[in-house]
Length: 420
Image (cartoon, rainbow, N blue to C red; front, side):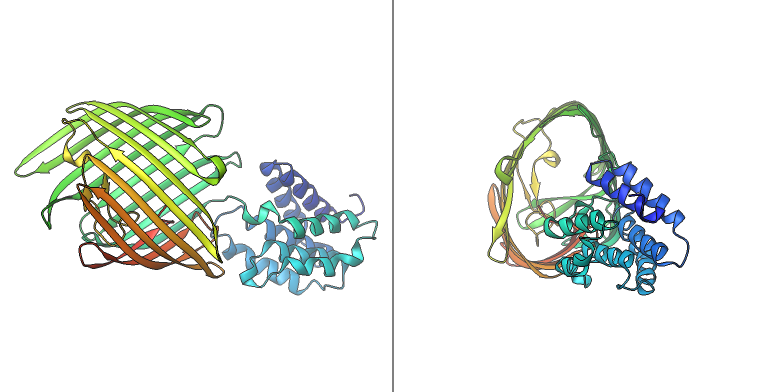
């Protein structure tokens, strides 16, 4: 587009690269355009606003702190009557969330006059198409970091720091890191990474310390554990396989024990017709022999004005040599919400969860749920809660749930991310 100001022409080049899947080249072009657009002419103001509106979607969930004021000032001084500024104002309608005042339906009336402008027609048509079909940039995967409070029965109040980058290097590599601690003495660190490719490599490191509960009748008995885990593997299509090692330093009564085990781990997952089906097997030997089996089915779909989500699963540790702390368990912030972590624990555990999610306004939604588990006895919780999706959305959800439980108690949990 040689007739456009250079900075805006570079923005358009970046847009074409993004739409073609070349995310790294697109971001580089936008940054180059931002460096050029330093003046106060309408073309510079429009380009500056365009750049900040784009980069806010690829520079993490804190990016609004350094981008929003910049595009607001540029658009304030860039009159809609100017054709270049009209493009920038249209970009705001496309790239700002509707709950913050944007509306893609305003793009067509604003740009109709530019459709026959030989210099700007292509840029206008591109924006009109995005207004009709949506633009992937508006929901781009980007990193998020959050410091959040947590709460669960027996664990008490806690604090956690979480970092997720689902598109590292704009290549689709994923990195997750989290650290947490709570009033019961629990603390943990977890690092995970997955490289995009065929095959794709993955790895995990974890360290945790704190009480683990085993119920004797209706009374929990606490045992103190320090656990370290490490795993490496490869994934190809739906299949993932690797080697996992675990070391436990446990205080079981008056005698501290240390046990280490290692062995293969394999998972297979698929997503037919919107459902997600996964199966896992883990075999470890050493201080004891551990066999873990798991099957998990999840799905969600529209229901009324919201959506209905379902999870059904089963887990087993069938070997007599498996210690009780390796048995499948439910309870805490994600399963049997309202009951403590480990409330349901047995060599064979079945799990079912049903949740209705209803949007309220922008990032706020409400949910009602039923959680149940079978582990020798039957446990259930029924309740509801609120979710706040902090940008960039699903990767950064703060959740508060309150439930009535099969123990005839009312429990509350505060967690991060959807329960399932």
